[in-house]
Length: 114
Image 1 (cartoon, rainbow, N blue to C red):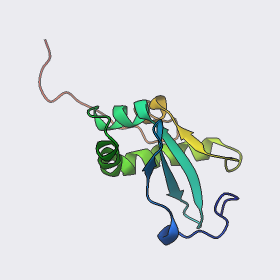
Image 2 (image 1 turned 180 degrees about the vertical axis):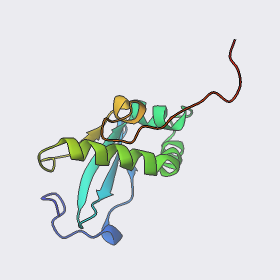
Image 3 (image 1 turned 90 degrees about the vertical axis):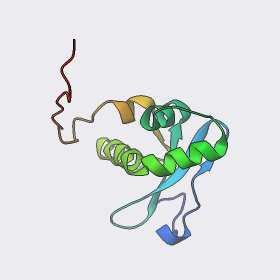
Image 4 (image 1 turned 90 degrees about the horizontal axis):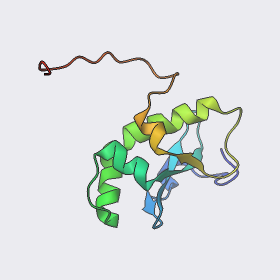
């Protein structure tokens, strides 16, 4: 549980919301409780492939990429000594650069380049 939502369960967590600058969401923790998070506009566009900046489009894009965004948030939490005092911010490099704690995925080209 966090100080921001001491008795909140995942069923009571507010839905993701756009505040005009970033998308705010609550990350459920494995042991219970929540961590309040914010993903920047650039990070959301990077993880979802870009597109419209309309609120509904951003919310749809977040929903589609939520597992990857939550994985980036979990990686950020593992890097910390304790939970954040406020929001846990997710930046573009958090979703585009693989975390050292994340398993390495081998990638191969599907067609020859050149």
